[in-house]
Length: 374
Ligand SMILES: *[C@@H]1O[C@H](CO)[C@@H](O)[C@H](O)[C@H]1NC(C)=O
Ligand SMILES: *[C@@H]1O[C@H](CO)[C@@H](O)[C@H](O)[C@H]1NC(C)=O
Ligand SMILES: *[C@@H]1O[C@H](CO)[C@@H](O)[C@H](O)[C@H]1NC(C)=O
Ligand SMILES: *[C@@H]1O[C@H](CO)[C@@H](O)[C@H](O)[C@H]1NC(C)=O
Picture (cartoon, protein in one colour):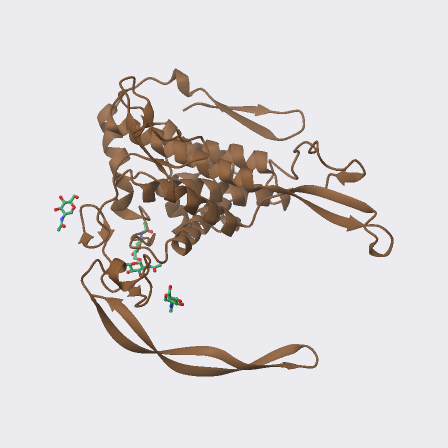
């Protein structure tokens, strides 16, 4: 991929690429690559090299040392070295949120090793894979937009978003907002680079997977955009709020996780049509938009450990004896039954407020029943 940088008059940098000029070659090399290291920029989440001080201007060899970056991503790393720790942070935020959202599910978004992060499970174009792509692309957009506002990055700053039309006329627009546009562009450029560098024969399963990944990356970013909102602060004499300053602000990332989990639940099953495009398998439903998640493969069996699919199985997972949901022992343990243990739970208790101003608590231990899948 050739990168062309356009320096805008205002001092920020925009991106375009000339991928359409790319010719399909080295098909087999790419074929192996997509199966083996589908998304390993995620490994930046675990990379100890990501300390800001290490990114000294001109320290280019560092980018080539980072594991998991594709060719285009290495190039971006060199151009935007100060962004790299935020990409690592974004990957971490994405993984953490994924594990929170899936804590009661058979597949719990566990990371298995540090090179491919999610392991073999990502080789399957499942709903779960769709979710991880979306949340990581979203997380990168999220941290980069924030870092811009905080003045941490040299190529962006406060948001330049236009004043919303419906903002009351006497409210001021122009506090320093998250640079959502820049975050969007950077996430698109960086996260999508790996997919856009590849090229597969039209109509191949690999090309379907590539389109699926790009679609879900975009859905993640759109979810961030959709949840960004206007935030305002009051000024004026003694809190009269006669004057308001407003700016654009990203939603709390938990909200993004919640929204993407909803989209995971209603994700659309896709297939390739005769012209090599991804289309919905069941045409009676509304077709997915660029804000929705899509997938092409059924999920592997997450009940039992399977080295081929990368499933860890649910043996040893905690379950809830009384719940009839996914976290209940019946579903979580896939009918294998469960073992019961007594466990000691230590909690803060008898908390007292002391004047002024702290709270002092005791630690109370009590015994609880725990249920663990066989
Ligand atoms: C992956 O983790 C293992 C054990 O935690 C460690 O020995 C190894 O060096 C790590 N590999 C990379 C590439 O970070
Ligand atoms: C693992 O999954 C593969 C693919 O679904 C299946 O063919 C195989 O039988 C499974 N192996 C075990 C041990 O369950
Ligand atoms: C997820 O499940 C696996 C397999 O049962 C378990 O080893 C791991 O600790 C769990 N991870 C989290 C974050 O709960
Ligand atoms: C177990 O599930 C029940 C019913 O859904 C719920 O009320 C209870 O709080 C859950 N227990 C734990 C320990 O999560």
